[in-house]
Image (cartoon, rainbow over all chains, first blue to last red; front, side, top):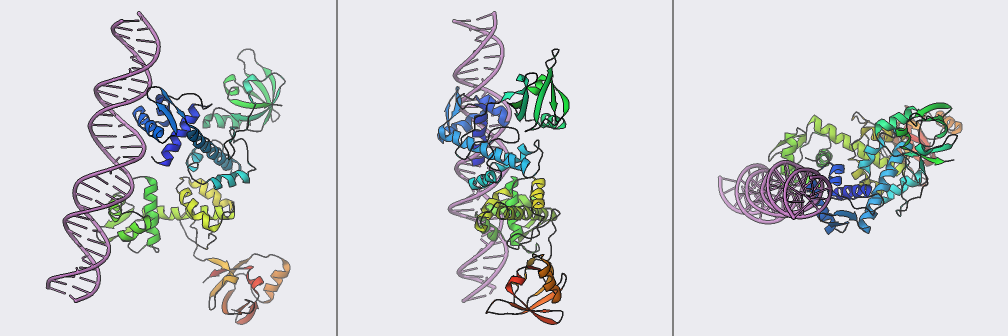
Length: 218
Length: 218
DNA sequence: ATTATCTTTTAGGCATGCCAAAATTAATAA
DNA sequence: TTATTAATTTTGGCATGCCTAAAAGATAAT
């Protein structure tokens, strides 16, 4: 099996079983990878042989320790590249994902570590997602959704949970970017939208949008 | 045919037909690519169909305009990455080739152009190999330090790397100004100083001074 | 418990990109 | 020119990674 193929499967399984405990169904994998479920079955059998996953037919799949390690390594590479592209090369945060998707397959740990070092070993990428360190350890974050914000509460935007370009562009337009400090002035009772002060300007944030903004309480 | 495969063939053909005129034999390609000659025959037939090469059986191969363009693009990407890895990330010169070999396949021109821009759009990589610009044009003249000049070599002064008034005044005094044409008559074995002919006058240039004079090879 | 529905797996196929060995073609020397 | 040698191409095969369609298995509703 080609490394790139293995990496893509493991990464996807990892992302679908967030806490690395849940079992992933073939259908979901097929959807994410945009391939036929039959192909997933084949691939999983091989990944099982290779000891990257434990796969019981008609039941589901989970990563082995080895598989999880590789997956987390992919997450690290991806997020380091994303951060680098955005922070150092000035790419828009809506552009970085696609490029990182290719760069993450370059097999050279020293390269990733140098890039990380160059940026001061960041713990979060431009989307606010945590970057595991070289040993695969994540920095624990205790962030909340802006939708849980309270009137007069002050917050700092740490990340987003919707990574679609449409969403990211929308946020940028209103200066609701990573690192921005916001203050909730009011919460409309009618629809639950938040009136927040950001960069000295008032912005109305719908509950849906707020639910996709991750903030740290200040 | 996978893009990466195409790219590797075109790049190799390009490198083997330096001036882009010569015909490349299958055997040489097979050797360079570490594959069986039979596989080369197959691949070339496909590349011919795809209009990347003109391939006449039992004769040889040369790149079409399209093929050459792609190949030169690969050269640019490779050399930009090499330069970047060495200059910006501190990789040793022996390490960069292998990594660049992977990075060069990442399909994003904006990325390469940003990297190039970051480094001031270099025309030569640290080896002195020319880096084609985004349009595929090579800079004719190769810039080197005058300290790398060879006996009987003819050069044109293009710039200096020491901008101190003392240094500039010294150069002026000896007519060693931008645009001046110089010829190395001799290199003293004792201290490595160069005897150069400039404006029909002989000048002794110490290694230290020569190291701060940038010249184009004529 | 049985049917209807949905998911997963099996079976058979296809394109890619490589191989080894045999056959052909070209180049070189006698 | 003919024999020898070298390069090239043909042939048949193999692994990868995907596909579609059909069979088998699991799930849920009546």
